[in-house]
Structure formats: C-alpha cells, structure tokens
Image 1 (cartoon, helix red, strand yellow):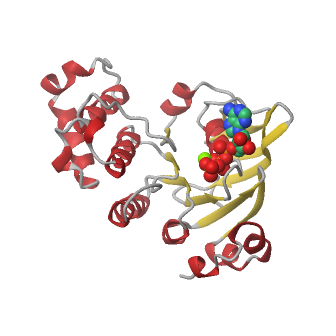
Image 2 (image 1 turned 90 degrees about the horizontal axis):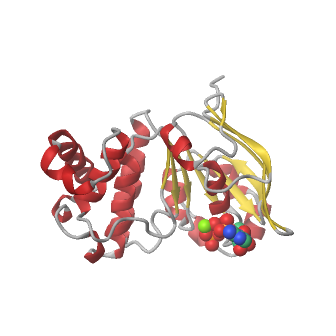
Length: 256
Ligand SMILES: Nc1ncnc2c1ncn2[C@@H]1O[C@H](COP(=O)(O)OP(=O)(O)OP(=O)(O)O)[C@@H](O)[C@H]1O
Ligand SMILES: [Mg+2]
C-alpha cells in the first residue's frame, strides 16, 4: 500500500477551555484531493494553521513524508513543500499581479525578496510567472496593480502565488468563497488539471458542495473540532449523521 504523504495523529488545538480541533487523525495519500467540509467554526482553518506551522498543536503529531513536522515554523514547513492559501486574501496590493507571483517565485528560487529588482533582472522568473498566470487565465491582468482588481481575481492571484513555490501538498482554504461561477470554474479546472499531473496533493476546505463533489477523491467532515466522517464522496453523501449534523436539508445541493 502507498505510504501516506501526511500522517496526522490525534491533532488537538485548545484555546483556553475550548477545543477548536479535537483528536483529529488523518492520513493523506500522495496525489489525492481531499476536501474538508464542516459548518462555520468546525475547526477547518485551525487544522490548516497547525499543518502549516502557524499554530502549535496542543496535542498530537504531524508527520510529512516520514518527518515529524509538529510545531515547526511556517517557513520550514513551506520549504518542505507545503503551501497554503488563506481564507482572507493575502497578496501585496501595491504590486502588480505579475510581481506578486514573481516575489513568490523569487523566494522559492532563493533570491532576494526585494521585488523592485526582479522584473528587470530575471527573465526565467518572468517567464515562469507568465505561464502560471496563463494557467489561471490572469494574463490580461498581469500588469494591473493587485489592489484594484476584482475580489475573485485577487483570490486567483493568491492561488497563483501558492502554486509558484511548486508545493507537493497544497492547502486551499475556501478558495472559491466570493467567486463568480466563472472564477469558481477556473479554480476547479485548475485543481483537477494539476491533480491529474500526479505532482500535487490537495487539501481543500469548501462550503460549496458542487465544488467539493467535483474535485474531491475523499471527504473529511469535521464537526465541532472533531472528525465526523471520512470517506469517498458517495459514502459521505449517504451518511445519515452527515446529513443531519451538517447538510441538514441541503439534499438538493448534494445532488450530483
Ligand atoms: N486564534 C483563536 N483564538 C481563539 N479561538 C479561536 C482562534 N481561532 C479559531 N478559534 C475558534 O476555534 C473554532 C474553530 O474555528 P475555525 O476558524 O478553525 O473554523 P472553520 O471551520 O475554519 O470555520 P469557517 O468555516 O467559518 O471558516 C471556532 O470556535 C473559533 O472561534
Ligand atoms: Mg475557516
């Protein structure tokens, strides 16, 4: 059997007396797309914060490709090939769209973060940035200031930045929230196309069930910090407790 890329055991994060994530165990296998769903406050972002090193777990362990990364700082984890997007946008609004991607590429290639020098000096980085922007249909916006483009486009730029570091494991936190149907489609098409190259493993949190059932190989349902169900889309769709606890009367939304 394939070794898991990521092994999470009994992961717990408490804030004061409240357990935001409580005893979650999960194996993530190479090349799969695993969606994490659950109502607001279920603990999805907190789970990501521990995986990416932004928060130290109260208990439990995280092993990436055989290495214990529990509690390591974000930069270390990022250099090991884990990259994440944020639920709230996290790009540089004073830079152009292309410069945002160039900064990420430049950091990945170990160059200076002084972005002003990049565009004029580094042709390969420019070309790589252009090809990433093209994949996301963002080429037309390459020279616009990131602060002035639409909300959905900003979120697409953030995904471009996430992919620039060529991560093995990509954590996307509600990537399509606030997007138009067209922008959402660009994200799902990109995730599916990257997943099909066999070089990427995705964790994706989402409230939009159409996106979840479109991209996910497996689904983890979180509820009140705990892992409620982990299974294939069919298993999750059929699970009575999931319907009751999370999906409620959303049967229609769950239809294929
Ligand atoms: N830094 C923090 N300090 C205190 N409590 C926190 C902190 N971060 C999260 N929480 C709490 O932990 C719980 C889980 O929050 P989290 O943001 O992980 O949920 P989520 O599943 O990402 O929700 P959403 O779908 O709204 O993004 C919530 O009750 C939240 O209020
Ligand atoms: Mg969240």
